Length: 340
Image (cartoon, rainbow, N blue to C red; front, side):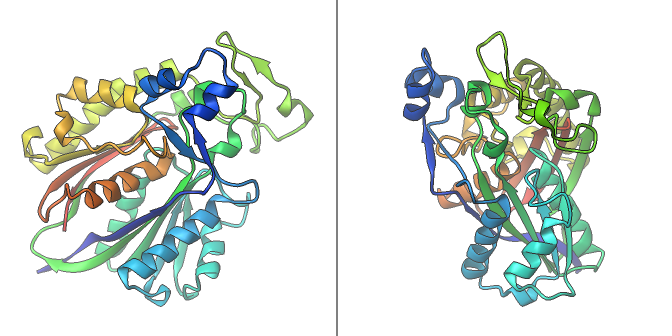
């Protein structure tokens, strides 16, 4: 028997404050409740409070996992914190979280600056740490507060994104087969300008000009300090990259599409998932969807979808799940999870 990594537990938390379609319809003339829902499939988004950081949500998710999975902070020997909403430029927020959670100082801690593909990337790192003997229990945290990057007058992104955090425990077990396998990754930085917050880093430091707003052809307002998304280009990238991603993961695993019990994609929005599943030929009965009550929560969408499907009784031991993350970067990643 060999030692393999597996997903031992997953939990998530959402901020208290909510942004409903009714709220948005009251702010944007011509955007009724039904129109917003038909375009996005999203009814409600959860929004972090003004003084609430992504790390606060991550700590809450980890604490929930400790309670539900009956594991103590002292048993964690590595933290992977996936976020594009760090507390500081430096230090790494994962180190701050280690201290807040009371995890021993001999624990490794790193930040992963990935977005929509970040959970799969982090899962691959956790598998490598466990199966190489470097760690026994890896705490994978994802947390995003994109709402803090969104201009309130930009309906193109405000209708889509919500805030959240998740905690996943990746542990070691003895088995005659792997539970996390057939990872495939991709990146194409030529697409970076199509989903970006231009100002705030070393390339374009924040200044007075960073907050000057401009209006686009659709009546959306944003500044260089706000999230910019070229929806048409992101959609084109997704339809090109995700089918080939799924094909590559299947090839590496030796599986056929019909062998997959559930397809768990990044929960971008209804329109995007409808187009992807149609292009690939995956039936809706095998596609996990979990965006209606929380929106697109970036790196948190896949673990939230896993918890939602588990709670609804869709997963059984031995089920083969195909995970597919894709988005900002551009970046994409997929793998097979054999549910344990």
